[in-house]
Image (cartoon, rainbow, N blue to C red; front, side, top):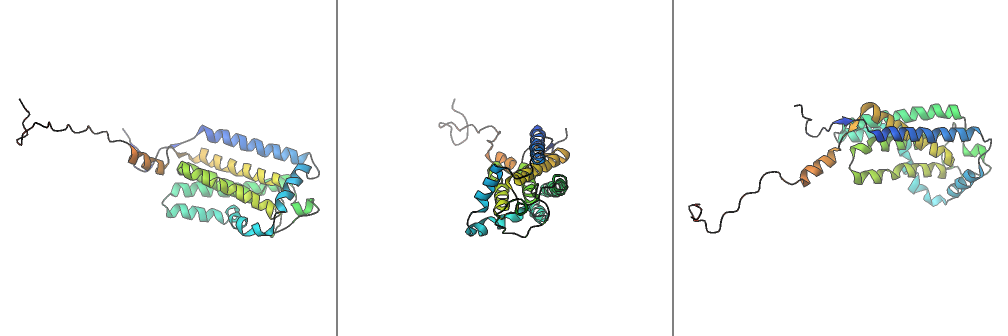
Length: 241
């Protein structure tokens, strides 16, 4: 019988990744269809954009630095951190999902052809150097791809904390005037799709390494409990008659 080496759980293709991939592609398709049927920014989207973009400049130090998670340079940095932690498969997954999301986002921008908020709205507070097209947000796509790619390798308590990061990145892109809300939603959907495709292609661990160690440490011993010595036993260890 072949056993899995310690610390290397079996690799599986999860059904949830297929469902999430289909859902993400559905959201992306709906967003593209909506963009194709409107010539101007919808009122609800413009209102939501201005409610975030008009926030005080004092928020900039808190939301702009996390925005770097969505840059192309964040991909090798995340991979290097995983490699230093001796999580080479997790590093490879981050590279595949991150660069995949980046490339898909660039292609989707050319397909959708939506401009930046500054070209579509009269009043925009631009707080970043911008160029190119708007939909989908490449920052949102890369951030979502990196986070979703590494989630299966982490314990549950870390997964919920990391999911906040793509939300902050998307919020920051609207705040600096780089993207409209629908651009961010499309970027998130594209990033999730890229991560799920990587999971389905390469597989994910059946159980995370951290969860396996915790289970092993907390699992009760299967060895039989020692039989307590009878109180009347003598020094010779003979049982009473």
